[in-house]
Amino acid sequence: MATTTPPVLDGIYELDRTHSTVQCAVRHVGVSTFRASFGDLDARLVIDGGVAALEAGAVAESISIGDPPEFREHVVRGSDFFAADVHPRIVFQSTRIDVAEDGTVTVDGLLELRGIKRPVSAVGMFTPPTEDPFGSTRLGVALQGAVDRRSWGMDWQMPLPAGGDALGWEVEITAQLELTKSG
Image (cartoon, rainbow, N blue to C red):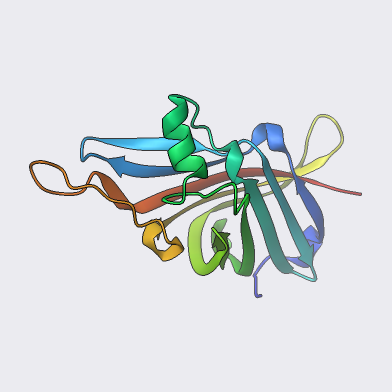
């Protein structure tokens, strides 16, 4: 793990669940983008001697698909997609974090989904620590990346009558993380 983060940032930063979001988006029947978010998140950023490590996770069951119930069952619990009954957690572990002087951040790591770990990369912005009105120190990380869902065994597809696929293979993932320094 390497980073250009200055040692002055050293510490453990815990996720502020109220002010953080993780979403996924996929093209649906060629006419729109279906978006969903994860409600039960956790994340921890540890910076030690200028080296940063990010661990994050979500409970698959917390994905924001509610209605109709049969669609939720198929996507969240079904073996074609998240298989939440068998694989209830989605986990990310960084392997490298680079922060440029302008705040641009690149995060490489392993995403575990459905019991399968694959390397992923995301880019975005790092907002350095600042004191909030309540005496806590907070920082922000905004990331965006894309993955091919087939890499995690999500191979479901249906052809459209006029040609093409009902569901995109590429899934965009965005994370807006606000973290508070502990201790």
